[in-house]
Image 1 (cartoon, rainbow, N blue to C red):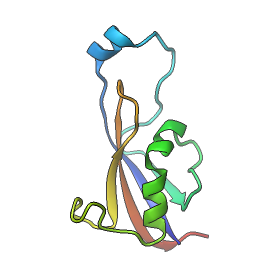
Image 2 (cartoon, rainbow, N blue to C red):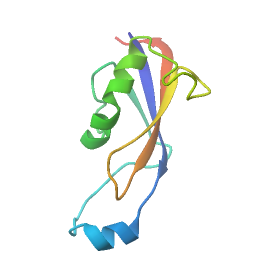
Image 3 (cartoon, helix red, strand yellow):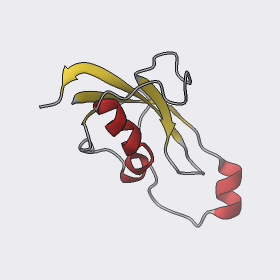
Length: 104
């Protein structure tokens, strides 16, 4: 099984939707652009967002087990995927990349 690097690529914030639809919350997201995590197969990296993990864990598992070429040519690097978390107010985009190192 391969390790999978998860890199925070971009964050968005839709203030208009937040103002119109969301109840006030005190804390939403700790992810920072450029932040990297390493996943060992199905295991969520320490400190990683639970909601984001729910959105991407199936892709991480597939990549860790040698899966590639999702959606027949979607990504230029067939051993990668660009996945966003499921927060419709503050989506975060993550690049998943298979590493050449096996998980311990």
